[in-house]
Image 1: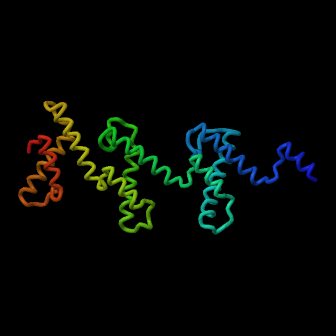
Image 2 (image 1 turned 180 degrees about the vertical axis):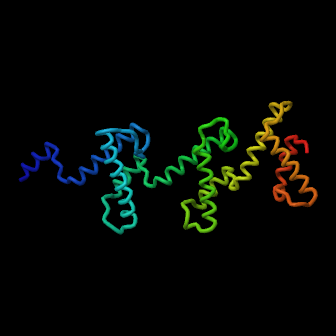
Image 3 (image 1 turned 120 degrees about the vertical axis):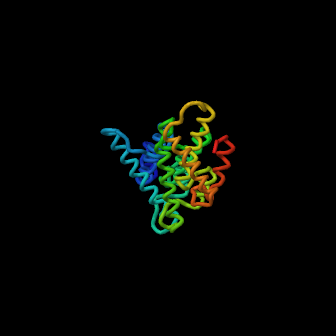
Length: 239
């Protein structure tokens, strides 16, 4: 009867358990996001009830991603509606983990470039950027795959263009040369009278040898890279 319906409403009776379950999990994700600053629920060192709660939340998040595909492709019934998708979007929901992590790494790399006028290297004196250096190498490999067959890699032309515009050297040898060039410039500017480290001294000798070969018309690593000669000359390098 109407009277019984009203009484049940007055105590918050859940007429649609599925709707209530979705709203409950959404509220848990909202709480997590407010606490951690992002919607990506990571597996940590939690124990007991907290670990079980986060495991349940991660499972629910995975279900939303699957059902987003159902919703977009209209191939299967989806628990998602446009309203629910918009609610998740407002929360900063991560629909594609790979895209999210790529963008985060790109932003970190851009900040590093802006602050250091270059890119991290294996012998970076600042330290703590090994993951960024590894990420650059991974993108180089993906670019090679893309050039052979775009279907075999997750990188896109748009991302390649963005990294190129940022100044990424797609050939590792070019990156190594620039790293050594910067070390030489720093040495010439800051400690010109001090002996060079063996690594830098060897590299300097190699540049002279390669230019001599180029001038003699012999096979040289400088061929096609004459801009390197110009850079060294402008820096005051003694040939």
